[in-house]
Image: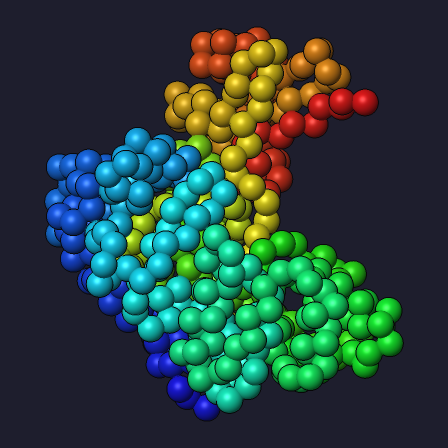
Length: 417
């Protein structure tokens, strides 16, 4: 590790070198996935792996979404609990299996710091020799194990607190005096409140790595008031660490073990720089090589590099969900249908479908950004809206740049009261 600024030399690579090295490794990973993963043998059938050596080529591959992963797992459950996505079954390569809601099964490999969490812990100020109180769940889901593997890689000791049992958490913290906490933002406050209720001195936590739920400003303020230096990370059970906060507090640096794209919800096409879109991740993990995995979460790439000296690209953080399907007059409307309409008209830059009205009185308005605000174009788009969605609605043509940059493709503003 380099002195107090970065976890390793990967974090401070020249950005062009990082891009070159990651995309030099990608063709081999894709070929490995095609050869050893039944799912990717089918999904990437006919793809020449040697040609997937840049972002433009990667963007031509299909996006695999969580529901598709679940469907494949269900279809193959008796033969392969991982749905053909893992490149190895039970045995030497897989140490544990976890179950996330759905139910989706995830393998844990035996590699040191398999989920790459140590990098986020280091950025949060955790250091070798410290005791970490781990309040992520150890039951069924991998969150607790993810944190523990990262802590051990960093040289820390872990108390496996898990969730619940608040009074026991208070007493254990009073006895062991951990310096670091990992868990959801709200649970540490619950522990502190319980300590006050019990008449026990406040726990000794100085640093925290938080995830699993929103971290609103009022809760941030509580951490500051209690002298706790708190950092967020963004990751999933499927992918491990995706991005992490640093002391600069300027977005989240993308982990060195993944390639992140920001795409238009419903299409998988990369958005223009600065636009909000869905986070799509390619994991450079040979055991579970998820390629263009759609997270369903929204974010945006922040220009420039982190003031801490880390040179990786950054995302703003979690900005909402991309799966914005809505049921209108008994029919589901999906972002992919809005994208289909936009593709029919080169004059249209982007569009947003606004669903309004009261229950049982749904109204549709497709707002389309275009320099051409002619009646002819409006009528043509109106016909396309009806053709694609099987629903009638209005079309509003607006000038380029008029729509908010928030990643919304379908904006459901109906009142149900």
